[in-house]
Amino acid sequence: MAVGSRAAVWLASAAQRFGSVPWRDISAEAVDRTLLVIKAVCFAHVINSYVVSLIQVRGPSMLPTMNLTGDIIAVDRVTARRGTVAVGDVVLFRSPENPRRAITKRVLGLEGDAITYLVDPHKGDASKTVVVPNGHAWVQGDNIYDSRDSRHFGPVPYGLIQGRVFYRVWPPEGFGFIGQKATSL
Amino acid sequence: MRTGNSLWLLTKKALTGALIGVTISDRYVTLSPVRGSSMHPTFTGSSTSFPGSLKGDVVLVERFCLQKYKFSHGDVIIFRSPTNQKQMFVKRLIALPGDWIQVPESSEILQIQEGHCWVEGDNPASSLDSRSFGPIPLGLVQGRVTHVIWPPQRIGQVERKMPTGRISPY
Image 1: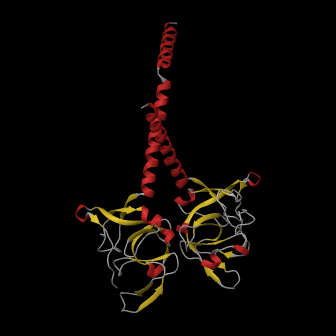
Image 2: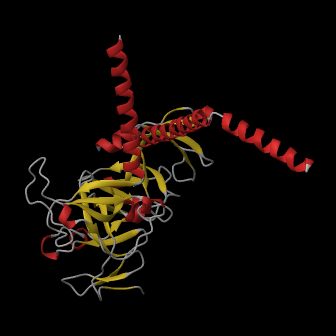
Image 3: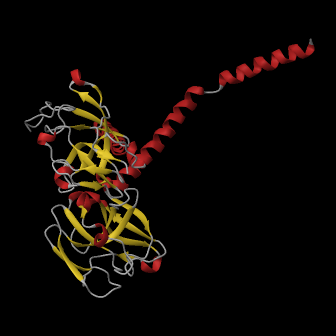
């Protein structure tokens, strides 16, 4: 009997407390916060894909321009979107062999250019000349001995180019612009 | 003072809306008009390029497939032209990496390389596709067409279909 009445009292007070919680304010604030997160994500996406983004690169193919161990570089998205990539630029593009991977290489020729390259730099100096077709670019790594590039998979369409690499952010001692470079074969 | 304030609020709202809209259109779904007759009878493209005309079909394009680049035979996809990056094409995916395809108008059989695909229009008489520019890299694909949403009498799903006897998996 006593237990039952105590429970009833507790229940009544719980209901009162529950009723006095400002649910309306809380839900309004939750909506506000969620909206803020969504806005931040959208802002990041737009900056990332239309203005500039940071990317980590690895591998030996761009030595000595980029290190083996994973430099962080800034990629400018405007140039590729406007289609004003120039010969000598380092570009980031989707690999024609695996669309899930993006790779960086240097542009050595644009449409209409004649490119002469060593077929296999490890074995003698047999060279080949090709003309880059319309809407394509010829890309090659700076380290011609250890790079998989246009010499293997041919010229890449402009549509695959995602951005122009213009600045190294990390490591601190290599901080600075990654610019054009006169290329010699 | 008061009008300036409300103007600022309006600009802020418009900007936020634009940001969210662009993100959704880039990552999830987008709308795209179709022009030209290369995909007839799946889509009826407008023959005129008169600005503002809504004669062609408007289609819904989903971009979830771009996270893994997983496609099926017979999907209708949009992709950047391999010869002109500003142009988008919509075509049907005929062959995926590893497939052997018989090139029409010749008895040649070729294997699709890793990371490439073979695309063709539904209307072979007037279509600029892999028969002229060869297999395209999958990286050029920008989305998969799922529905026609305009004009109203043609609203409906875009079906996956394959011409028979064109490809063999091994």
